[in-house]
Image 1 (spheres, rainbow, N blue to C red):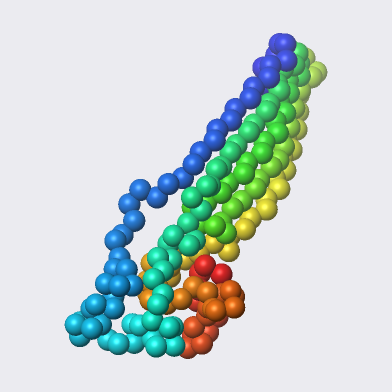
Image 2 (spheres, helix red, strand yellow):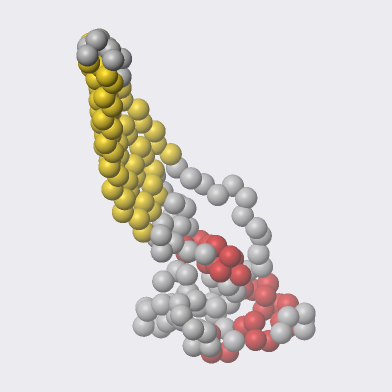
Length: 173
């Protein structure tokens, strides 16, 4: 800070993220036509999947209502021999994927003191940051390579997982 009356500063922003360019993919009906024409192998529409799925996975995992915000409040001031600045901030970030968010908040304090006829300068700085992140998110490359003929849900409403793979391969789950 600078010597003088206390000064208060507040900064903020709000944002919404929208994917601008998404690659175009075949839908399930187009894939089934390519299979019928012999241009794709039959396993692209596994009979165990029921033959009725028509899913665009990017629509299932895209957080269309994402809103991110940031707030910072600072106070500064002091005298000729001692100045200070203290600030608090809060940040809430939501990504374009449903399970991709982060919340940060923290504080910072700076004190500057001059003594002994300006021959000794003391600086005290302290900062802290707290972070809570949900980065489960998705691997867009996995979503974008998943066939729209694959189901998202089982008949009972639970998420479908392909038994031929290990781990979760349904990024909507």
